Length: 415
Image (cartoon, rainbow, N blue to C red; front, top):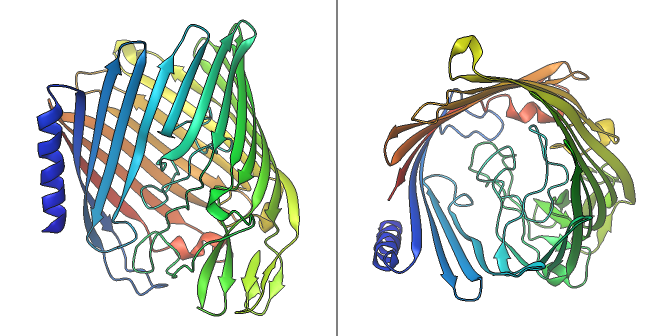
């Protein structure tokens, strides 16, 4: 009842202010269906329901000022960790002739490739929302954008770190473990001030960007807390140098993302509880030595426009994913994988799209399949389909996902 009251209040609020502000509201109903019980966690939940509310309020003021507010809330029937709210954006934006200035809680995206976004580091991943890391938490920031003849320069000051949301012990698509309180390398913990910069420009059809980040890692190194017998999220201080390149030529788009990261603990430290990058024995915290590594994603997308004299566009995507740590990389890293995918766009009144792909790990000789589609079924309603099939070998770190094949349907109603 509390959730329904909250949703109702939010909808009434959006309606009351709609006459004064630009307001859009989206109410989602999401249905997960799994094909098997999770034998690792003994989770027998094969059907999972949840609802989410997304609202955007936008107001312009005289003097080229504006404010954007995007609250979000999800209620999940089974996973308390997935029932959560967030302010995706609450940001003031000043637009001037020679610069733009933003302050508040914002969202920034970096990257050009399809399979993963290595360079995208400003916002924390909302990992309970999606497997592919596309959903992000709002990030407190001050952002200065300079547009010059020689290119564009973005400067960031990030005064607060957001912890990554993680699937709970009873949730699906997780590791079936409880998490201890997060530990930071910085004595300032989540209040450490991170800084970042990104320069981007283009030469004809060639676009490139160079970025630099120093601060608390967005990806936690998962250690072990022997006192509480829980997984320990450890956030190290890192420095990341990123490079994005994209060359567009007729129907071809050649893409590259690469990062060089320094400061991430190694994953091979032997402890009393096995190999962990961080280990707390109840008295002392031991962290593995830092390491420097690089990771890349490179490939192309070729689009056939109007195939067979129709309005349908068909794209072909091939990308190679590499991590120099190889088998010593974190479980979520793609260290030796290739993505083959196809993108279909109907260009119809319903804006129907479909993306299907297979990600092959050529070292472990296993794969995962994914299908994502979206179409409008009414003027103010869309239907989204997502399906995943995991086929890991028993020596793959992702072996725990062998029972997690699923289909997800999302019905979105726009008020």
